[in-house]
Amino acid sequence: MIDTGQEAKHLVVDRSACAGHGLCYSASPDLLDSDEQGNPVILRDPLTPDDIGAADAAVIVCPERALTVQS
Image (cartoon, rainbow, N blue to C red; front, side):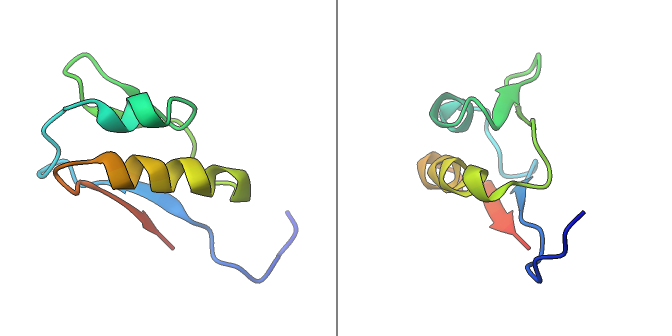
């Protein structure tokens, strides 16, 4: 692995805040799917630089503010 000097970024779900609306995985289907209960499942961790835009889109559409991108 090449060290770019940047910390890895992760899409994080606050399960206690998530209400399972499904907007996040509809907005970013390459990064998120849903489990049997409708809760988001993160498909890629850590995020690649190309994933950041899709991760940000998922964060923005979540009405419960249950998603964050963290280093």
